[in-house]
Length: 316
Image (cartoon, rainbow, N blue to C red):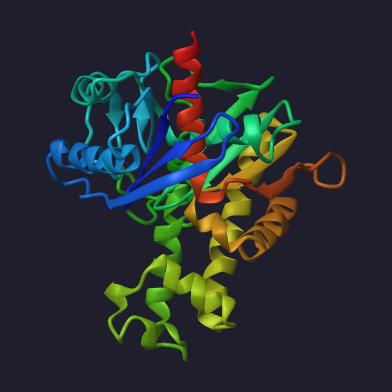
């Protein structure tokens, strides 16, 4: 069977997991991501700690990395990562040497799409859009069951489509990017702005300090019926649907799969997204509107796909 580990490297956390050939997540380990304004070595040390914890002294047959950034066509370098310090870094080669094993690298949303196509919500679909919602938004396009990576490997960066001219500043250096209105960061920003303005349990959850508010707190409050938290999800879900309408107009997919940490909210996020998609899509009433579903693996889709990626390379 061998020991294959998938690692999802996001803007706020690193998740490493042993994944079986059937896509079953076994032993896991987490670390906080040091941030984007630190030396890249600190991020790679966090990855190493998580990988070694999962291995627990066993020989590692391969590690797949799902990176929240622009990965080149060769799967060697992270050219740019809005929420991480990698800038043209030879991530794959450096970590392969450090760990002494086979390492495969791809964009996190591409890895999530691989997981959903092989083992999850898109097992029977041929043409899908994958959208991952975490700190920001990632995306992948699958055509005839193959991830379309583009000429330079950087297709699918849907989160940085401009939806509001001169809008909210983005981590990428631009303004008005889609992910500034529909992501974990957008969810928390919306909720923070309402603390002190409207009655909400969120004020208690963050001890009266809006800067301490987190996405999981907003999710918890929404599940308990808090109006502000539910309005935050309604706003993020509405913007999700608006962006999806643009993507459907461009690619006409059979299915849309939404993953990432924010997708844990399920229909609280997806119902307003479906409504906004139907409202915003050109030709509604005269065309098929693709189903919008939650990723079967939820936030774990990246690690499952990354492990599948490196396992496939090992077979070859």
